[in-house]
Amino acid sequence: MFDKPFSQACENNKQPILDVLNRVLASSKKLLEIGSGTGQHAAFFAPRLTHLQWHTSDMPHNHGGIKAWIEDVSVNNLFQPMSFTIGINDWPLGHIDAVYTANTTHIMQPSEAQLMMKLVADNLPAGGIFCQYGPYNFQGQYTSESNAAFDEHLNEQGCGGIRDIDELIHWAKPLTLIERVSMPANNFMLIWQKTN
Ligand SMILES: C[S@@+](CC[C@H](N)C(=O)[O-])C[C@H]1O[C@@H](n2cnc3c(N)ncnc32)[C@H](O)[C@@H]1O
Image (cartoon, helix red, strand yellow):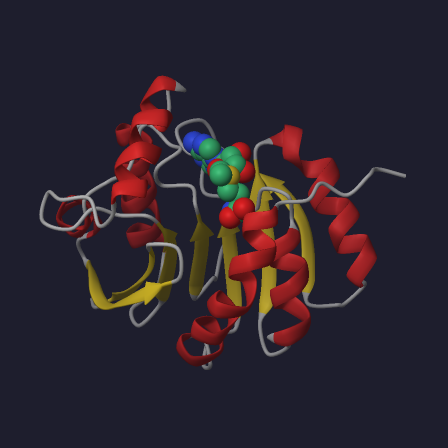
């Protein structure tokens, strides 16, 4: 039996995120999560979004924890993690109409974040939705002092760092940013839609 990994941040943000997903994914049927991490988000969201097939993915070293969370909730719309490392693996799942990712964009190198936007745009059908949660800069500015300090920490750790929303808009075409929802702790939920 694998001990379930735990993230306090996930515990804090899961309900505010669910409130957004409930609204924007109301018509979606099959979703790929990129960078499922501990698996906590998937295990909280899938039983509450029962109209949706929730497919988890991440780098292989996170699969044990994700599987443990999936086993714990035991619902039939939540699926085992697929190996998906942007920059290494091909897109892992067909016929999706939604993508969700949280707190991955600033961990990835800029080239990987750019590739993620392109892969999502390429693989969503017209009308498909991409929900991208995390800290973002706005018009070249940090949205808080804590985000500036966090970015410095990310850079020291060798992560790509906080990306600017304008940069993502440029990379995401033909996805259109249809909503930018302010979330607790200086985060945003970016809602993208494939427009053609
Ligand atoms: C800070 S964790 C966030 C995990 C979870 N989504 C959450 O909100 O707690 C960042 C996640 O991004 C994943 N990740 C980093 N680089 C990646 C890449 N190139 N492709 C796919 N996933 C990546 C990591 O394995 C990790 O699970």
